[in-house]
Structure formats: structure tokens, C-alpha cells
Amino acid sequence: MPEERLELIEEMRKKNPEDSFLAYAAALEYNKLGEKNEAISIIEALLKRDPQYLSAYYQLGRIYEETDQHKKAVSVYKEGKEIARKRHDQKAIGELSEALMLLDEEEGNW
Image (cartoon, rainbow, N blue to C red; front, side):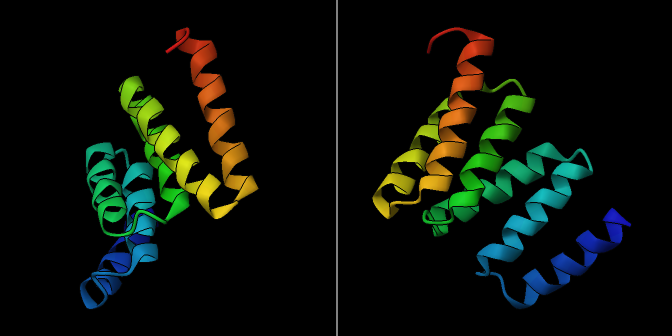
């Protein structure tokens, strides 16, 4: 079923290549299928095109953590947190702050 969902999302992305939500959804599906490098690539491209897409920062950070790229995770969480501050998005600030705190506890101070 995840493969079918991904196939549908990819078809929609072909018709709407600039749609941030579809890119984000595709990345999540690739991640579920264990294709983490593809998920990273999609989210990195999404954030270059649409740096205001806050949900992508958290997900990219999580995937970086899962692939032992902790310094990149810290960097992306901090970048997302700064954008969230500018947008006064308290929910995103809280989520990204918690992710940083948990990573800090696991790895020691950055």
C-alpha cells in the first residue's frame, strides 16, 4: 500500500512539480519505505525552493538523526527554529526546540 500511495503522489508531482505539499508527502513516503537518501534529497530541494515550509525542517532533522548525521540535524533544526521565530509560530518553535534538546541529551552538548 505505501508503494501505491507513493506512485499516486509522484504522478501528482509530475503535474505540479512546484507543489511543496506534494514534495513533502513524497519524502515522507520514501522515508517510510526506507529510502532515506531520496527523502533527504526531496526535502533539501523543497527547502531551497520554499524555505518557509516549516514541517520540512523537523522531518529533515529526524531523517538526518536516523542516518547518523547529527550535526546536520542540529543545523536544520536551528534553521527551522529561526524561521518559526520570524513567523511567530510557537508550535513549530516548541517542536524544534524539543528535538534539539533530545538530540543534545543523546549526543552531549553541541
